[in-house]
Image (cartoon, rainbow, N blue to C red; front, side, top):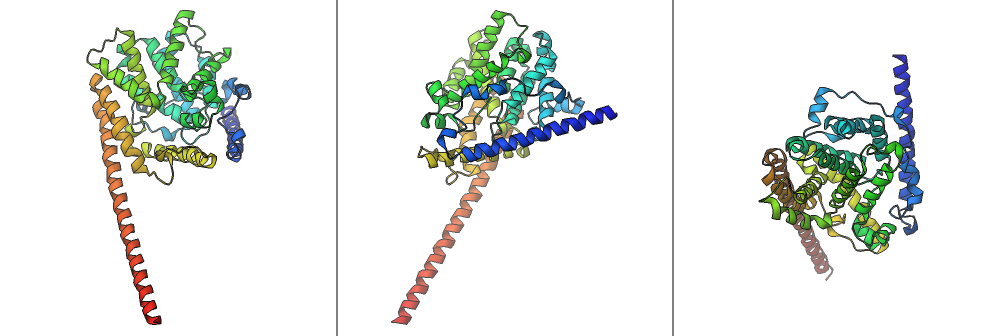
Length: 405
């Protein structure tokens, strides 16, 4: 017992030191924000390579014994992703790989899996939204959909491995500024990838740089040909998360929906692309107390970007401008024109998702529309009050003028 307590106290020290390091890093990045040359989006792979090798080995990441209650909750979209510390999230991700049979079927060394997950965690930045918790959120939703839609019966284990691994890696080293900023600011990433999905290409590159480290290569026991297929599949899925391609990907999927064939590799690839897209933007599927904090996180990241764009004289998107957007206005359009149509499309192939995934989206849309009505009524009331005060002020000045006469 004493040894266990000493070990736990040692872990606390490690976590505290990491927190101190993270805080220092955030301060440095904030201090550099006003200087284009120090932009956190403009960095060299050489500067970042040290992160590609695990900074701490497995003993500092204990395997938590997940309760049966947690194991069952983990399979549901209602899972509360805010309740867990990083090490607990890592253990949950580890459990998913074991539970889906991926460790056994692909002969993944369990210690290598731990090291890989540690390295993944260390290569997500402390952004308000695009951080390790978002990675966990997306992967947990994918795990839920695999269970809900019985995907292990319909897809191959290689497909399941691609879906899970692409979810884990899909936003690696995200700098907190989107593709539009990268392209308009002509950052190193935009130049490197010729303005074509610079962030998504970077996430893929970092993912496979991590896997190139022997101690982190969860695919080391997979033969060359299957590995090539897995690599191509993961790249395809991560690139599909670029929202600039949303309409193109969804329309292509709709065209094959009526004649969908699980034995057709092209059909299955398009399904997997839509699945990862659903999981990537699925926060509003979750209960309100889990979903709403993500809206605040996303708006904070948007406002950081728009403030920067204003200071650098770059175009600013209205939906990211703190002077123009509110929570209801941000969410209503996104729900009505992006989320609901996409989940309605997937529900045609998997009717079981309607009650669990679509119903919360409809309720969320209605709630934000009510909030917007209240917001509009308050604005109208304030406008009338201001007009009334202006009228009273004019009348008072007129009286004073007449008195002077």
